[in-house]
Length: 215
Image 1 (tube, one colour):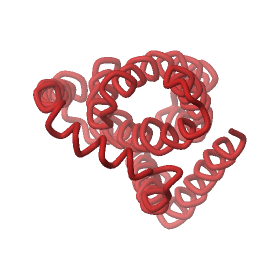
Image 2 (tube, one colour):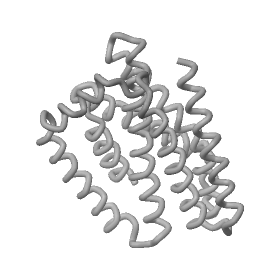
Image 3 (cartoon, helix red, strand yellow):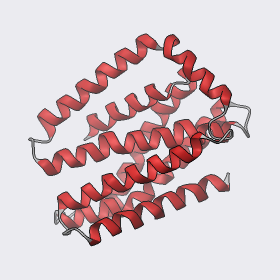
Image 4 (cartoon, one colour):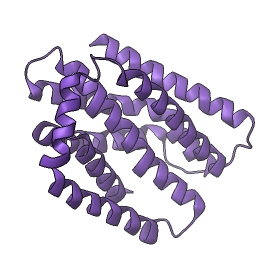
């Protein structure tokens, strides 16, 4: 499983490099910082997903058939969670951002971009990869949960720079620790959806809903 950790370390390093390149041509403001954060995650995410999509280890044919079947088997529950997700996003914008652009950017980063990125990375591609080496789905659930929580440490730069730019008196270590605690809850909930329904869409919807609730 060390290759999983290596992949994740490389992804975080590449993301940081891309973000710093973007910030080198932009003024260091709260808005520009989070625009750079969003763009860097999207570039890394799209690139790695296009690469992993063609791998039989990370995206086996059997998994693709399961996803096709889920389109019909999980139709009703998908609709329910999709509606809940849209409601969560709308309510978060209305009641928690005060329509301040910086707050909306942070919401897009933490409640849309990161959940999409992490669910596709962990509950789809890395789940398939780990599952090819272990027979028990519960073991895969536990392994992926641990890895996904540890991955939050790689967001230290995003958290510390946001605290710096808004002159917050909070310490990065405290915020990272609380994010990891939340990560355990998210990993348990999305892992359950993956284990029970084998549906990445449900994982994404649940992750976004939880992120909106705690935003």
